Image (cartoon, rainbow over all chains, first blue to last red):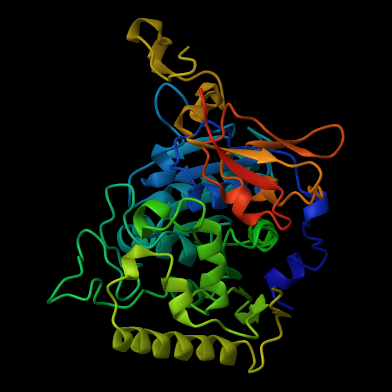
Length: 323
Length: 97
């Protein structure tokens, strides 16, 4: 038995009846109406509780929670540059470890969390993240993936999916929008041989909270990839962000899985996958795509999902998709 | 400190421009952003808590009877609760003032 499955042996999990009432993130934050990213952050903070130290990279979740002279945080929170959230989280973890050993403080149960957006994780901060995962610090890294640099005005990142229109990959006569495929960062995290990697989305809140709690319980580094819809940047309705996140799972664009000690486990098997056009329909960033483009993307999505299924052991041991 | 608007004079800042109160963003009235307002129909409500769990602005809280009530001081009017309600108990109505 690996260290992660050993630590998670007695894990009970949350459900809608026993939701923790604690809100470490206060209301009054400046997120856009219908922000899926702050919803994911809120759920993650509810699962983590108040005994945490948060290390934030630059991005939406930093600016909306800390407009001077106010702060939405009720827990210790550090804002650092774009590239080093994971490095600072590992430094904080080492400092606590040293102070606990020397008897200066006695706080052995603090959870250390580094988080950033997809730009801060996939483009700018990947070397710090890779280093922290490789050194094996006991911390959680959360990537809130909204598939572009939304904070500065929807510039493309390496997390932007193929065909999506952004301000730096505008669709037109000679351009299809984003011309490269999305970087598979969970697979990069798995390649570091860390105990726990998972993907989650706020459309399945209990699943997200369970995964965050598991990541905090596991000794050693854990990586969470959280798919966070952005109505402003994706050009969908402000009330549709949760629906779009759900459609992403149901159309196999964003499969939900956990990797515990290198073993892939499917969290949610999609029995009757919806066509990818249903996921594209509410979002204006995909409106320019022709039928041939959609068929090409569908083919790639199907192949990637088959790959995940194969890693999970063929049939996928996950729960059946409930409508 | 700055209350509903989040605007403050530099003369009123603490020494070292430190923020001394955790979570004081809750003083800001984000309800000003709203043009549509969610109203719960208690006849239809099943107290399932979907509105509470999907709200990005922590607007909903449980009252003594178990219903989830909105705090309109923070509600930005995004309408996720109305969309996600499984029994369509929440409707969005135009804000009037």
